[in-house]
Length: 339
Image (cartoon, rainbow, N blue to C red; front, side):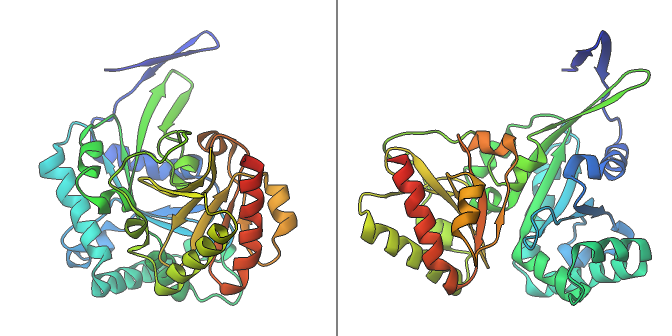
């Protein structure tokens, strides 16, 4: 159903995309507005051999450098909701997921991305603005791709199959994010509506976090969240968990779809466990965290994201053993604040 927006006495009507190619071009032309200024987005369909990604080629590739030192990579697929999910969308995404688990395909993809970037001087210079002077572009691309294997689907309307498939395939829950993009046009104005905002997608939260006394019943577990993590990251998580529980045995570990929350009466921290890092969101203002952390990098969260977490919070990233003690101290403070 087409919608309309009324703003300042002007009617701005939804203008649907007739062709997928037009939709793809629209995303490319507006990517900095949609994803943020600290991002790089490009397509290279003519440069990517079909066998590289199991016979499927994404519509684009997104590198997100918003959080300093913690870049993210996304294969991007732009879709029209009227396309058949099971015959068109599902096979494409399944091939992308499979390619993430094929080291040979992943290596080929990194080579293709590197070649494309370095063949385009303007694009290469833009990459260098986000990298340290000593960073090699190929190694940086390879590390970013291997450490954040995300798939972003941008679609022009709701499609219930996405929720249904997530209940069956855990890989979809971990890797696939969905954004709805709608375009509204008047004679002299274009309005883009993205749902959810990319800042929410980046934070890996897709529904409002509910508060409750007891853990919610779910099909998720600690092992589910840890299965893709390296042995080093698993060990870091266990160290943090053991130290917290030795101080407060009543802390509840509450596995949900996109995160592990720690709680007593309320959530006081959230763990997003990646292959090479722990991303933790403590329920404390960032200035308090920065005052306690000297070895642990932190990042701000947009107000829209903090609303999902139900209060002031920020993110921190754990990759080394020497961060454990100060992170535990911070989490204990967050726990005691929530008691």
